[in-house]
Image 1 (spheres, rainbow, N blue to C red):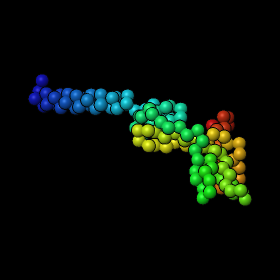
Image 2 (cartoon, protein in one colour; image 1 turned 90 degrees about the vertical axis):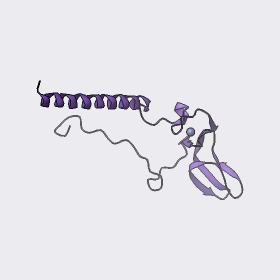
Image 3 (cartoon, rainbow, N blue to C red; image 1 turned 135 degrees about the horizontal axis):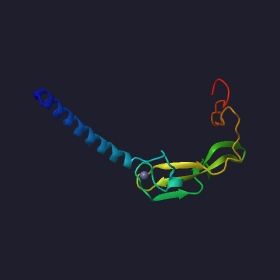
Image 4 (spheres, rainbow, N blue to C red; image 1 turned 30 degrees about the horizontal axis):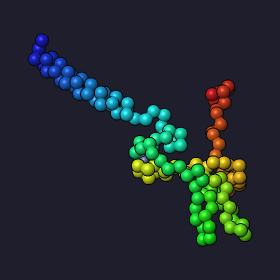
Length: 133
Ligand SMILES: [Zn+2]
């Protein structure tokens, strides 16, 4: 085997070993990565920020007004008796890092007016037949 060929072979072996190390490192990183993307604390019982598993759950999150404490809602309406919450929320707070997650408990009283509150629906699927499928 010529000297030039031996050098090229040694270079290729070195590059191959480096690539194997990188593949192993990436495999380990992939194994640590979460599959399926973000999962809510409510569902996973694990904090997406710190992986903590201890939380505080406020079944009805509240907020203070000048005169009282009312449920925290996604929207509010003002009546002569004071603010009324719509889309009342619950809260989960991670006791490890303090991350807070809010969820609307019931959308029944949320008014979707198309201006201040807009319904966002899934994009329609493309046509299944014809020239644009
Ligand atoms: Zn956390």
